[in-house]
Image 1 (cartoon, helix red, strand yellow):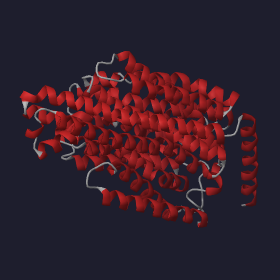
Image 2 (cartoon, one colour):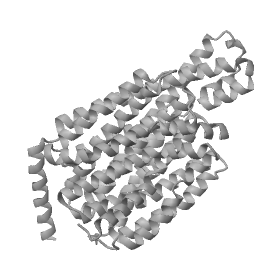
Image 3 (cartoon, helix red, strand yellow):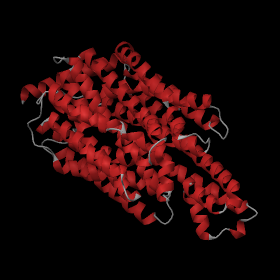
Length: 519
């Protein structure tokens, strides 16, 4: 345990907040962004996931660079780069610039965020490490959940871009704290970084996420097929490189350990569920229920509260009952949360139905987040701390990017299909031109714009848009339910039980110590 451990852990959590807070701040502003730029649903999806995309694509490579050249240095660079990225996003002149700024902000977070967990892994051990990871995990998830509330408060008085400035006070605080409390060098690697593997990992994640987002966009078949092919080729090249590199970016011998890879996949689903639920939910609250920005931001507070409350209990359960039991326990409320959203989140739903859905998701993440992250750090040697922390970040960021992309694609497809059906069954169907139909099916925001242009049909257009949004939302929540069931089955069948888990962790430490001694 480091000297001034509370100050060190507090500083790392603040740095993690700089990286975490922007993840969800865009969600509440999406309706306003859609109106400001007449954006399509796909463009809004990319605004929402752009930050996760940049972070997920860069986190493995930049985590390894930090392990080699100085973790504190990477923290500071990432924190400082977050400032111009946020400013460009706040004052973006077009939706394309906004998307690019979000991706750059995610890359900045890719420098800072993986380093926080790598330092926790290097500085703490045993139960103290588990408790530190629990606090780090719960606080990170809660901060992400608080993003919509802060955004809602800002949007009550300022323009949509103000939500991208929320990290500036944290940046001002984080820089001097990092310089004061974070040690410059802790158990850093001396081997060269696998930069080729890093480039391949960036292309692999980027191509995958963009392909998912454009999968349901009309006339994008060539782009989607090309990106899918690029994803497959890059995956093969990445695996080939990692098997042959002298110092691989991603040690496949470690990654194939069941405690590691099962926890990694389980965490992708758990954290992705949180981000996907917030992404769809914030739009539902404003578009369908008519919540104000501050009301929709505040509505997610039950998720943050339950994450913080249950994370300490999760750490105790991991020590007492093992990671498998705690992961499975966490999956139950996540599943119930998606079922609540699918069955109860309708037009005219009361806030209690909304609060219940968010509370269940938050409870599940609070319980499952700690074992998902702790299993990664426990299954790798300290020299691979960057790999463990990078994978823990991928759980959140790749999970968030994939789940939001899948949810967004299904929302887009379901909305468009329902709107086309509504137009076809309307008495005025023959009067709807192809250009107007394109606008109506593009997104809820575009339909609202059309409603203002044709006030005599405004109520009918808005009602059709709400019903179409609910249709797309249902498609997304069914995907969430299936993902949770698959994740739970994977943990149940493939993750070792508590006694076997302890045996394997001891075996891993013995093997890794032998490797260290041989080197």
